[in-house]
Image 1: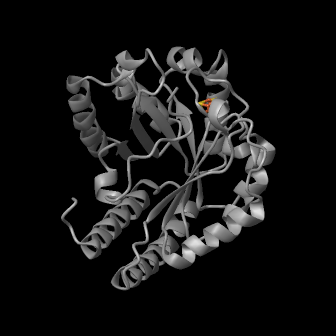
Image 2: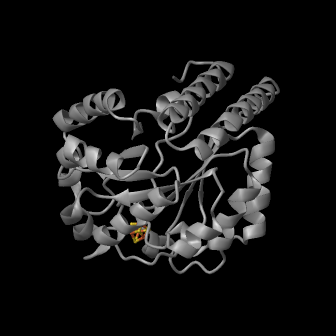
Image 3: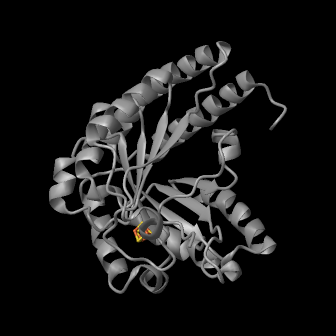
Length: 297
Ligand code: SF4
């Protein structure tokens, strides 16, 4: 990858994004509102790719993806979370107006996707609200899901470029063990609410040695797809917390994960993205990203 010219990298990224948007169209067949948004998005993404290519020719590399951590605050206290320790006490969060202007600048440069993380992004509803004003960019918002109540969904209704991505660790036992008792049940309610609302939404799964077989099983994936989820992020566990090395995927499970993701893509009407791995196609110059809900210590 290091030897590829910047122009080639830009083309490669644009191809990855195009296939992602086309795949999203394929799996949104039962959701006409989102499918209409995606059709518009295909044109926007084409324009964005053109802008990136023009900047590239002038020597400015514009990434197709950005990650914005909009807060360190969170309503949960999960095991192994770094957000509170590193950012929780930070009082000087950027105001919503600044986030909006940053996102507009990103759009004008040709950025296609902005991954919004925290802490818990929905503690800053006024920032999340600004997503509606940048419809050209798709915003997966990584959330613990507990603040997605009826009134929040009503407020964000029609903001098709916002894709909630809810963190799960597996079924009830795995999720409650890390996130707290009762969380899984409440997330089931959130997922039902999103499905009833006809939202396009996803889940983010931190894959460890302990849960790899569970989160890739037909039983788990089938249940979450049946609940209406159309997007899965598999994020390999990164050990930052001391004494958690045993959670890192062993080579056999890492191989199994790659194989299963390929099989799942063929078997279910949903998008499956794995990190690290897929960023080589979609964002080859970026480092593997870590969402707020990935345990880092
Ligand atoms: S892991 Fe995510 S949901 Fe849990 S406390 Fe940390 S930021 Fe909040």
